Image 1: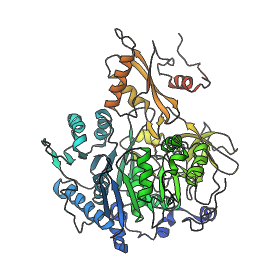
Image 2: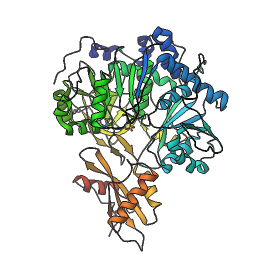
Image 3: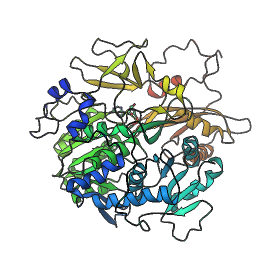
Length: 573
Ligand code: WT7
């Protein structure tokens, strides 16, 4: 379907842009100084210097819907300054130190991240749903010296403190009458004194900014290290792909525990002086539609799982609300079904524009831009300045259209991750023949459009969130009844994939529904609700290669009704 070119789209003629753009032009296009790189400064001081101090930066609605708070850019700036001062002067954190963030979507999460970045501190965002084991697997290796948390969640932090000796400060928001323990301190917006000036730490483009942990097939999650120099790509993709305008009310539904919630829920919109909405509540159909209506959302960045759930509610539900302000919609995180694109045109009068990227890429790489012909089901074309390809198993570019291979990108690009924190060999393994390997499979059609085929590894994508099988299997092994296990993806109508675990029990344990529920709960509490297997199949033994590696692929293929393929390495019965 061809979309009429919005007369005033930010990118204008995308074909011409592609032809003559490279990243060295980004700062000039954005009108940005060449010698300032601090993301915290761009998102606050710079916007105020432009005379937008009184403009709304954040509209926040509490989870019960009873409280709405609004912050102008000047308030954001002064409160971020208060956090920056607190981190450095009160706690003694230094630029380059790591501060973890373990908060629900409350204003302190957003303002704390900005304050830390301003002070040159490396911020490590984590999902509030993480259980102690997931928390320890990230906070520990990151060497975080401090953690921002809140009363509700601090009990989980207390449980891991012995395992994470580097952690000196636990900063608790809304502690109420909580009895503070050693190393715990109260700081939140109720006690922060707005601070007129804080000189942003003079970072370079290569100074560390954010650490986002992400899952792979092997080992525990790896920390994708980002730098302040990511900003021009995050800003330009927000401007050209998400097509934000100065008078927009922008809503990115992602949690900052996920890279989307930081790149496009903090950095992108605020570095451009845009007003954004944050809903503390998760997905609730009526709350979401009510929010779109009441706050007059114009640009909405969401994810396929949410869109599929909205589809289930039907067009009639949409008609109960006035969503006439919506101008542009975009999606990320999983394949966007063609039906969802068609449905959104019927329901909202505009399609969702798919965008593809990853924790490691830091910003959008392949997407549908305003003015482009949208082919429902395709991820679109590489963003200007991005060189992509698909590779054979020998890592050679495939030139024939329609042939699937491993999706790869030509490094470098500004928002690219600079390392897997303290795991140089894992980082190295992501590059072959001068290409960055994404771990996804895709093909390119005759017109250069990219089509997603699936993951090239065993990582499970549940509702847009990647879960590593190793992390689940390690946690499963800690259960007294589990002898060995394999976690694989199982198809699901709503979440695309959910976790299914195959478990062989230790002698003395018998399969039962009760044991299944007990193991599920064990994982939910240790890791998170997303990592929890939705089904456990008890088996006598797991299929293994002759060298003893569990063949997850075989188990996965069975779940998906696919050909099992080559099993010649399978262990004999
Ligand atoms: C993986 C990255 C995107 C930033 C947040 C997630 C899958 C992402 C799409 C899309 C099909 C997609 C890929 C990718 N994915 N976007 N538009 N179509 N698949 O970052 O947690 O690092 O996940 O999500 O498999 O590699 P992430």
